[in-house]
Length: 130
Image 1 (spheres, one colour):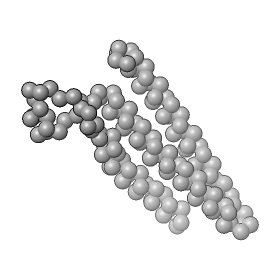
Image 2 (tube, one colour):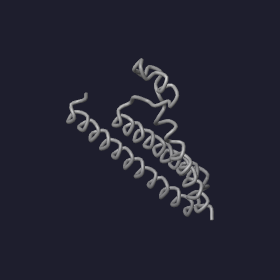
Image 3 (cartoon, rainbow, N blue to C red):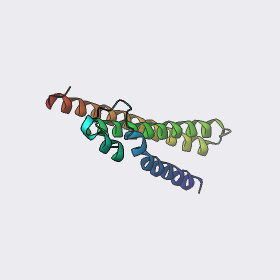
């Protein structure tokens, strides 16, 4: 029952984070260049002038940040369970499994972030916009 509640809470947290993700990913900088002829239109519709590849990179970085936070929280929860097990082998083994899953998740997240950064860097270089 406790494990189901933990999974449910983590899933809820992940869904909320991905709903909030566009807010952090599409924050417009104050130094956006606006053509003087279309300044009124740009102020009215509030469009940014960011490169779509940079927007995708921000989305990926923000998603990896939230996933990394979830993995670290999982590791911390496992450590807390281990410390409060009181010598109970069942609780210790459950904490070890949870910690192993958190560490594997963190490694996968870091590898995915590294691959995504590599691909985006090569994409930017290949298109000639550095």
